Image (tube, rainbow, N blue to C red; front, side, top):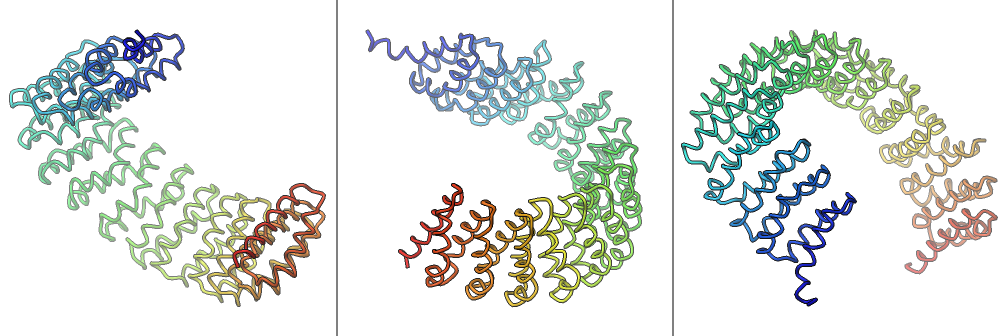
Length: 587
C-alpha cells in the first residue's frame, strides 16, 4: 500500500501546503514546484499539476509572483517544447490579476515560453491567448496583452498579422490610460517585428495617437518610442515623422515629458542624424537647459558633454556655453552638481583656447561652490582638463582652489582631494609637489575623521612609490616618524599603519634602520590598542627584514607583548609569533 501511495505523496503535500493558512508554507511549496514536477514525471505534471495550478486561486500576491516566476522555466518538466502550450492557461490567469508585479512576471514568463515554442503551436495556442487577453473586459488583461504582441506577430499568417496590428491600434486608443501606457511602453518592441511598409503606415499612426494623448503619463512613455522607432526608420522618414514630435515634446506643458526628452535627447540625436540635430534639436536643447523646472535642467545639464560631442566646437561655444555659464550659478544645487559631473568632458570637445577663456572661470566658480557634491564632482574629473590645457596652466589657475579644498569642512571633499593627490603629484612633478602639497599630506595624517587618516596613510605610500625611496626618506619618513609622539593614541595608531604601508616600498635597510626602532619603542606605549597594533605591524615586517633582525629584535619584543596583561595584546602577539615561526620553518 505504501508503495502505491508514494508517487501521490509529493502532490498531496503540495495540495495540503497550498491550502495552508500559513503564507510561508504556501510560498515554500510553490518554490519547490520543479522538485515536485520531477517526482511526478512529465505526464502527471501535465495532467495533474498544471491543471491544479490553473484552478488555484490564491489571493496572496507573493505566492502568485513566485508561481509566475517558476512557470517561466517549466518547459523541461512538462516534456519539452512540444508540450509548452500546457503552461499557457495558468499564466493567462496570472496575466489578469490586479497586482502589477505579478502580471509583469507572468508576461515575462509567457514571452520566455513563446520564444521557445514551435511556429504551429504559436498559431494554435499563443496567438489565441493574446487575442483573448486583448479582448478582456477588465483592463488588466488588456495591459498584459500589449507585452506579448512582439512574440506572437512574427509567426502569424498574413490575415492574423493584420488583425494583430488592428488590435494594437485599438489599445493605443483604449479608454483606460493604463492600457495606453502599456501600449506606449511596448510599441518599440512590437515595431521591431513589423514589416517596413506597415511600419511607416500602421505603427506611425499608432505612434501619432500616443504622442497626442491627453495623459502626460502616456506621452512621456512615447518619448522612449521616439528613440526606438528612430532606429527602425530610414533617415528621411525619421526627420519627417520623429523630429517634429521631439521638438513638440521639448515644449510639452508637462515637465515630466520635458524631463524624459532631456534624458533621452542624445539617443534621439543619434536617430535623426547630425544635420537635423544642428538645425532643429540645438534650439530644443537650449530651451531644456533654461527650463523652469529644476528636474528638467538637471537631466539636460547631465547630457551637456554628450550633446556637445555631436556638434562642432563653434556651435557648442555659440549656443551651449552661454547656457552652461547660467547653469553654473543655478539656484538649485542639484543642477550645479549634475553640471559639475560632466562639464570637465567639454574641455576636449572645445579645445585649448575655448577651455582657457570660457571653461576655466566656470570650473573655478564650481570648485568654490557651497555645496560639497558640486566641488567633489569637479575634483574627480580634473585629469580631463589637464590633457587639454597642460599642467602649468592647471596648476596656476586651479591649484590654489585645490589647496583650499584640502581643508574643506566636509570630510568627503577632503577624501576626494587625497585620492586625487598621487595623480596630481605625477602630473606636477616632484619640485612643484614639494612646494605646494607636501605639508598638506602630513596634515591629513592628523585629521579628526578616521577615513581621512586611513586614506592619508595610503597616500603617503603611493607618493613614496611615485617619487622613489630616496625622496621619501628625505621628505616623508622623518615627518611621519615625528608624529609617533602625538599625545592622542588614535594619531599614533595612524602612524603605525603608515609605517606598515611604507616598509615594503622603502626596502629592508631603511625599514631596519629607521622604521623598526620606532615600532619597537611604541610597544612600551601605555594604551593596549597601540600595543596590539605594534604586534600587527611587526608581523607585517617579518617577511621584509633579514632573519637575524627577526631573531634579535622582533621576536623578543613579541615575546614581551605575549605576556601583556591585556587579552587582545596577548592574542595578536601570539599570532605574530606563530607567523614568524612559519617564516623560519619555510626558510
